[in-house]
Image 1 (cartoon, rainbow, N blue to C red):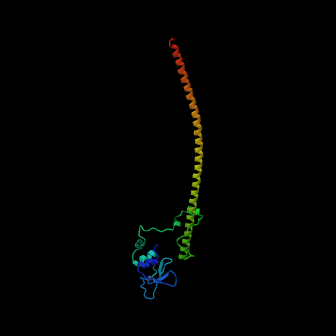
Image 2: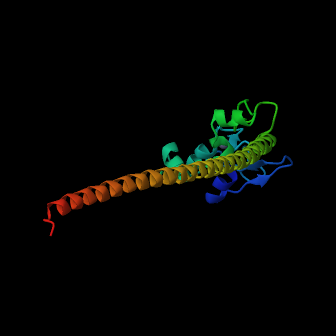
Image 3: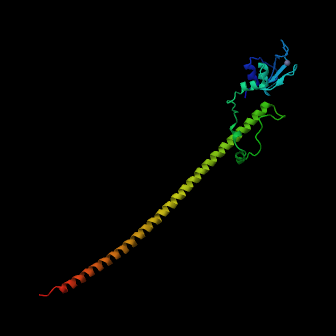
Length: 215
Ligand SMILES: [Zn+2]
């Protein structure tokens, strides 16, 4: 945002301080004020100007247009070039309502424009403090949540490790018992086969021997 004082200095327009803070007087360019005539008043707290003689008034853009003698839209484009019009928002303003509610802030964010009871400066200070507070709270909350997630993740990992170990142990046990029984069974089969083959061969041999003529 460009302030009204900034606009005055860009246009080499002189502002004279008054006894009131943020309140300036100036020679009105249209009323051709001279010397001690100051019909124009400029407020840097409200970013407005007003001429008590010709009634010219407005905000920052109107002031720039008026001083430079250019149309309002041109003045606006000069002060806020297209593409550079990035309104710098406070990070707290970018939180959603739900996110703010998570940290217990359910009321509306203070508006940038001061309510009647406050000066713009007081209000801006209060607003900034509130936004800073919300942002601090949110960051602390995020940190806490992240730590909690990590703790939970660690617990889950440990739990999974324990489960995996117990599963492995029971699997090893299964393999061990499986081996023994399989080996015993296989051995038994082998012995039986062996015995069958041996006895078969023996009886065949005996039969052959009977066929051999005795001398
Ligand atoms: Zn005037």
